Amino acid sequence: MNRLDRPRRLLAAALAGLAGYVDAVGFLSADRYFVSFMSGNTTRLATELIADTPRAAIPALLIVGFVLGVALGHVAAERAGIWRKPVVLGLVTSLLLFGALLAVFGQKAAMMAMLVLAMGALNTALRQGETPIALTYLTGALVRIGQGLGGIVTGRREEGLVSFIALWLALACGAAIGASLFLAYGPACLLLAVACAAAMTFAGYRIAQATAR
Image (cartoon, rainbow, N blue to C red):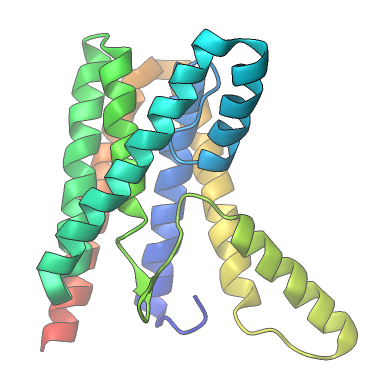
């Protein structure tokens, strides 16, 4: 994060907010399962294998869907070259749109499939060097925040502390907004996520366009 320029840092924060929003909607739609936080689904998979074996299929399928979404995003990103951001984000927008339409027609299982694919693909939209930047799971960001706070105490400043705090806050705020709107409007609130993703696709296009000049 600390090596990204300001437009890319802002885009990363916006995408983290989108991930939080979508994850909250998925979480409240599907009996407290996640569409972007696979550590949580892995814990549920393990515990349900022991305590309630038939239900273990749900987190297992979500994990598989997330991995497939990452693979799909990676293929799109590699083929897009410098247009990586708008192409991947266009893919994410399309998947979210399908998910929103399925939600409107009450197809919850298919909706969850689209959301988990979208969140997997989202993690391939940005990268630092050759390493993709995680946008839907921020345990690593919290570790960097902790290291930064420790660095303040020891007198060794850690770069990027503010950026990692902003990334975490964006995800948390996105989740809070998603939960609030889901409780008010139900799964139809995914249409706002689609609109936001489309706006971020345009922002990604402008960044890529500036790079291409």
